[in-house]
Length: 255
Picture 1 (tube, rainbow, N blue to C red):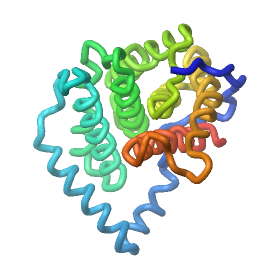
Picture 2: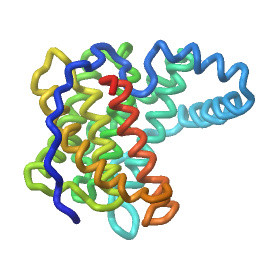
Picture 3: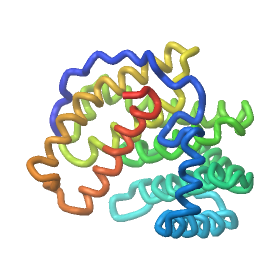
Picture 4: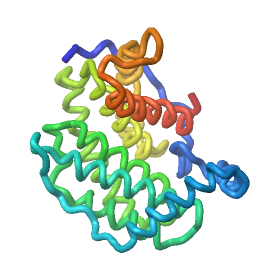
């Protein structure tokens, strides 16, 4: 594991004040719906996601569980992430509250976990992504209590353990872990950052500032031709979170 590089001083002065602010803002929705109605590929993808969302309505929420030969929480974290993004996204495209309510139940369940398994930090980062996106995308219809519970979980179970690692110079994995951890934590931090809360802005600035250095170092792994030294599976994993990291910055703070 390589050491972190020096952070880049970052001041988030252009944070989009309203929610949703991550990836898909409300002004984008008409364009997406138009594409679904006119483009065969988009229509097929929408129908596939719609079918998955309908199937999730009848499933119980994911319990906290440790699985696999490595004894991690990653399988659950990934399942929660897929569920929350699918359901909250389908709500935004259709306006059907059943999807929003089911996504909210999943987030409240994850918020009640005893931890997000920071011993295997990929698990923590994926849950920060899941609840960050769900919190942001459903913010306008969440109750004040639901917002508080979910935001507190993102903070205490996702961001605080990450800041503790930053304090110990213990984050910059020189492989796919770096992109996943920085990408997921950036999504979570920008989701709960508010212009009226200086502490949330400071922590987002710290995470983004360190990520600007370390993700930049990690992106050299794509040189010289876009490949990845860990092979296609980890290329897909790392690149997904690299893209989430960049897109979160672009949509939330405009750069």
